[in-house]
Length: 401
Image: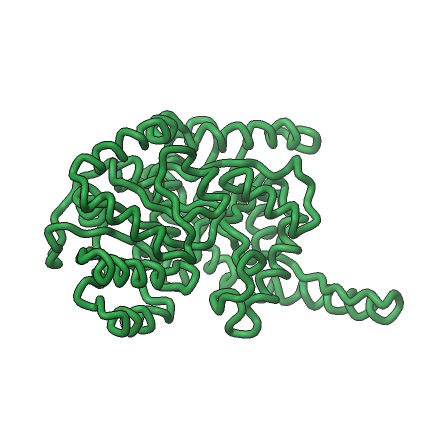
């Protein structure tokens, strides 16, 4: 059976999504002997149609579009006539267009696509769809999901269309499944819970960053979106300084999504700008060092249902302080330091305990050990193999695979 695994842009500046996709790429090596796997990506006109790397065949989908413009134009001209007739005779407003991905599937003998990210596509070929979150539905007040004006409606239309058509939908936990079922008309049986794997760089070497690190610091790796909730950390730093006489340093890394200047301004306004360090881009080796030498990792995001950095922190034995949204509590289980993402006093209390009691850090790491054992023994590739095996049985109803 031929499986086309579709990747988004995996440049490091993409943040957690990038590290996840690069990790999945490593996981594919464990499936290679069982399935005929090709990797699809959008490489623009500068990359060839096909390349070989690490014994995988890579297909540049953009090249498929460019090389078949005339063929697709002719097919869609026929569809335009059909669409006009549907509108005139049956008042059917839906537009039918040919898909480059269906053409590619026919040309390359692809049986199923696996979208490793929430892609906005259209196709009739069977596909597995990864849905990371429903932030636009869960947090509609946040500008991340409503500005510009087309974003909310665009996301909602995309998910309504694709979740219904998907053969399987991947989500990280039961909370994610519940959110999908509450917001979209989807069959529960095709939603599969496949937690995130341990990020690839956790297994590699570490390297001391070039940036100047305080002797003691907390770490928050997150892009500067409003929902990442850097402001709660700023407010907690102010409380620690004013009410407890504690100067707690925090290192922020991640690309700017429009909110970084606001975070910097708020740090200055709250009188803690000397405690806030903006690390910018760091390498994966440096990222690992920052984790292993931090007093703790604060994950303040108010969006779930699950996230990647908490897994990294627990695996690398870095004390985790995380917002208490339902998805996080399900993802990380008991023994973790939770706080209400809108109550900086709760976050400050956890930070104070770690800084004031030298034995607390070791105690937290011991409490995290049970979830770490689960993470270590979990196999992402095995979970995906179960789904692909199930589809293979179905696929035999119409073709030999």
